[in-house]
Length: 403
Image 1 (spheres, rainbow, N blue to C red):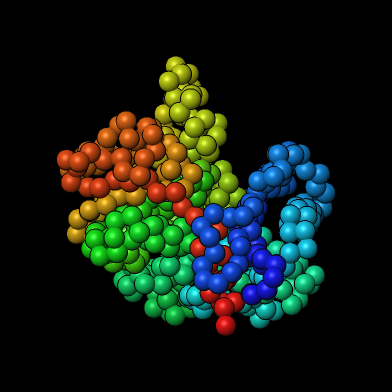
Image 2 (image 1 turned 90 degrees about the vertical axis):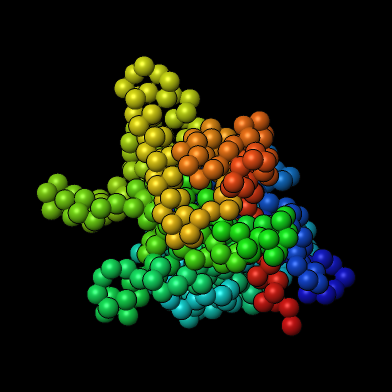
């Protein structure tokens, strides 16, 4: 990776309707924390797709109805090549949601790895197939360009067996039906950030819960800055209520939908992933900012917005309580991801319900999204820590590419 021209690592974070992309300088050691250039394509497959980047204002994007994702990736490729202007691309790092029971560390992608990762598509249908599509295209177009898969499940490899098991048959466990955990790249970054902010020894000693609250959401309990329990399990449907996903749900309700209401397997899957959560209850939006703006209304819409937000907060509080029991107490609560980092109202509601822990919120600090939002008298340190999944992926790629 040495040479006269700076080489770069491209990070792709592919979701079902959006792709985040970022370029990190690749030199000796770790890449810089901030990308040299980044952007995002949104609303892929929707009515108004667009692209924006550091040096590119948000611009409408024309995508074909037949291959919108392929077209979006092609546009990203063109913009990357434009920005590089002849400078070398050292590697492409992909955020991959599911590594299954085989992959616990970043791995270079080849045809065999790609085939293995395809088998995990049913476990993460909102993300897995789209990351694999990007890999497949790049393998065909630039077979010698190193591609590194970085797994969201890897950080949770430290979960004890009792946390990984599902209460199914032993044979199911041996077939790989187990709790994997997700959002691992985010939690990995937060663990690094906490060690830097508080000192490694104090950070490792603290019983910590990290709340990754975005359109997808989960909690991770850490001891020694390692994952010991988490709310997402076998799939990214588990745990907290989310923007459009159910979170934990009585399996009897799924059986009822299929047996009594006669929903097909595909209809049930669509309902659980796309029509539930905040959107399903409110009928308005999966974005809590929209619901917060409507909850004061004296109308059916206002009532449903209030109900959706109340259940959203209750599920977070309930799952934090369960993780506190696993940890045997709580020293630090950290909010991260889009909602966790920027929604002071929901943070305040969660923290108010956790007052029994001796948690006291500093409301001015909370409104300002500061790194510490608890008072000095609070028995639980509460903070806001911006996550950086793309840098973690670039860091792993750089480590694998270093001789």
